[in-house]
Image (spheres, rainbow, N blue to C red):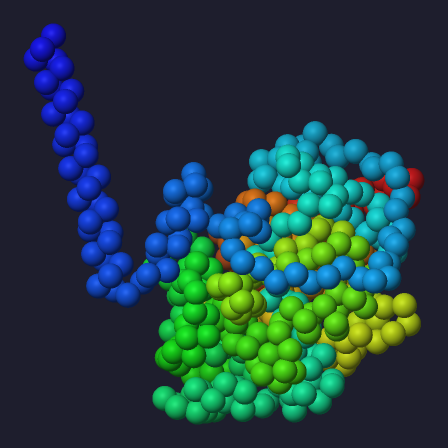
Length: 415
């Protein structure tokens, strides 16, 4: 009995030494590498029982409020819902769906929430906010505050006059082709994306970036592009990103609830590359704005000519060794055999999907996203299959499921 007690005591002692060693090593690494943002990341995840960023991180970071519209736009709602099939319900549950909305001809045909989510719940957009940044760039150009998409970044960010970056333009940022030394990873805590999310100096982070590939040649998705566009908007307009968003988009679209934008620190800068919090219905209003070519209640909020350029896919290389057919100016584009689908997309499966040919908008919010589409081996000897499947590269397989579910529900509603 005494021997057993001593053995357990030694075991606990060894565990304590091991944990202490881990803590010391981690601290030593953080101090020597200068990655002090890791302290924030650890405090905001592991120490509160989380494994990483979440869609309900609103209270984890300081925020700026985007006030709801003084004249909220009432949505047309048709009830009751057409029920999901058991297969559809199982699929949406399996990937932790929290909201699924379908608008057809400006009418909300289907609205469903899961888990803790509800009609007035706000959640993180993650990278879906990047498309909002693209829209704000278009508005600033239309107002003459930014000369054009070919304006050098250094006009607004003087740090870019140095280190061979003077030739970088806003177009390069919009098309994700700046060629920065930025690692985009939602899982690697040592990536620039992680530092952007958990760090407290976004301006320093993006103005230190080096160009390691020729701009304009290759599509390489990097959140640093979006963050720089956010700073350009602020420099060009003399307003915070929150204030400009509220005045130019949130008020005009008739948003029914306040939205929030996470900051890198109290009184700091908005995380332009992510972290716009809003309700599913208000996210849908952004989709309806694009569906109607930038017009709300007969008023042109965003230039239709800018939007038409926004959804084109500039000819560039991709990591899949095919020509870019997936990304425009800060918006995803699925060619869909000449029936294009445009959409906002976030890390955890945040989607605002616009189908102009069907006059339809779909919103899906959740905590997981499907895997990226991969070319099937059976397509290797069939040119038509190769062509059709190449259009799907760069997109996630859950997107195609949402399109199919919406097709079935709208058809069932019309019967």
